[in-house]
Image 1 (cartoon, rainbow, N blue to C red):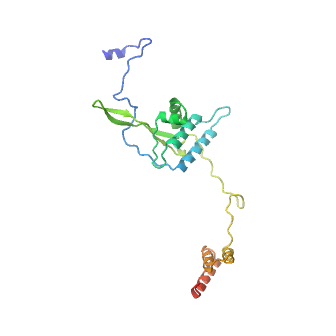
Image 2: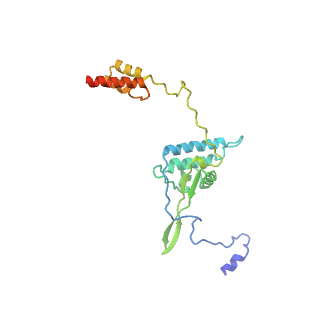
Image 3: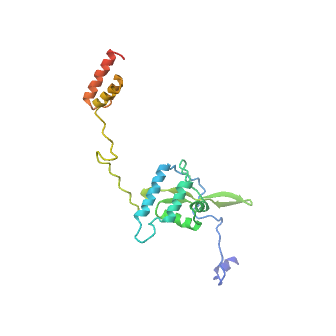
Amino acid sequence: MSTFAQCLPALPGFAGAKTYAAWPVWSQSTTKEIRFQPMPKKAVTRLWHRARDFDRQTRRKDHHGGAVGHSALQVLHTLIFDFLNYTSGRLNPSYAAIARKANVCERTVANALRRLRELGILNWVRRCVESRRDGRFVLEQETNAYAVLPASHWRGYREPPEAPPPAPGTWGDHPPLPALLAQAAAERQAGGTLRGAIGILGSDPTDALAMALARLGRGVLAANPQ
C-alpha cells in the first residue's frame, strides 16, 4: 500500500510521501578519525589579513564588500580566533556555537561557510559516530571538522608582491658597522681587555689585516699572559 501511495501525486495542501535514509546523517559523513594539522597563531593571523586583502582586491565600485563578503569574514574570524586550537589544529565547532560567537543566525553561518568553501579558503569533512539506540545500531551526526587552507588554494586571490628592501642609508636599513680595527680600538679605549679586542679582530675571516693583527695579539698574550 505504501509503495502505491508514493506513486500518487500529492494533493493540494498536503506534502507528498516522504522517504527516509536508514539513519538521519548527511551524505559523505565519515566515522573515521580526523587528523588535524597544527597551525601556529602567527601563520593563522597572516592568513586572516590576506583574507581581508582578498576582499579588498575584489571589491567593486558601489558594492558592499568584495568576493568574500562581510559575513564570511566575520565567520572566518570567529573560527580561527575563537575556536581553532593552534597546537593541535582541531577546529570542529557547531553551527550554533559559531552563530553565537559571531553574533549572526545559523542560516548566515551556513551561507558564509559555503562561500568560504567556494573560494577555497575553507574546507571541511562531515562526521558521524556509531551509537546504539534501543538496542539498535545507529549513526548520529557530529559537527564538521574544518581546515583553513593556505592562500595558494584561494580562487581568484593574487598574492601581494614581496616588499622591496630599504634603500641603503634610508629608514629601516641596517646601519653599517665600523671597521674591525675601529671596533677593536674603541673596545680598548672603553677599558676593554686585550683579549676582547683580539676577539673582535678575529671575527671576520675575510679581513686579512684584522686576522693578522689578531694572530699577533694572541702571540703577545701567549708570551705575556694577563
